[in-house]
Image (cartoon, rainbow, N blue to C red):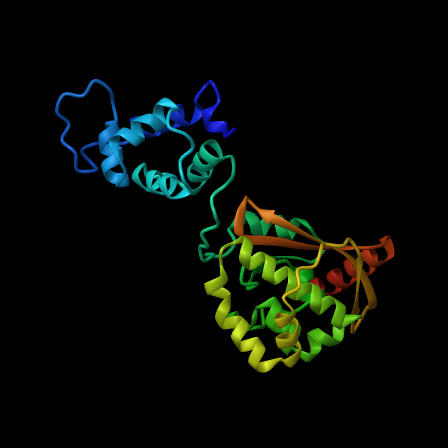
Length: 280
């Protein structure tokens, strides 16, 4: 049974609460004589282009579960935020809505402070299209000098397949590349960004036969916790535990953290960061 149609009718209560908070005048409705604040049920139904009777039944907990299309129309009619829209779907259907991709405007100063606090761990934030939009100093020193790279080249997938230096850093490049392609496919699908990644996929298929072959295989690999070894020109072989985290519940952003796999590696990285900081 959907959460919406339990005895307490949480969906109906939520709809009424959101309806009461809207200003009829601002939305083009005459105030007239109103017994309650906000919009009337028939006004919400009009804005959502659904039957007033059907909307009334939804608020009363009658008529069965609504469709995703109806909930989407109601969310627009009630001018819900993304968080409110997700809550509406959870109440009405017991699941979140399908992802609607939104292009990232980059990382906030607060997120940058989080990255900087993770030293000596290299850490970065990437979009669903795998554009790197924020990083800390350890990521620049250990992984790629993102500050020196033009914005259009700060793409983790493009670096993986088109940058010879990035390729040389990885042990067992083929296995890592296959996992990267699989993870990229999942990230794009989860964020609803298929249209946005299409130009990048087309470019990489044209410029990298290896990427083209891996993309055609259409594999989705399970996440496996493993130590990732990398070659560094000054430190030699460095081992990392690689973790990915969601950012504030946003499907379009994720945070990658490379945690040194041993105390010795952490000490070497910290020493290198101290040296590079003194030179700057």
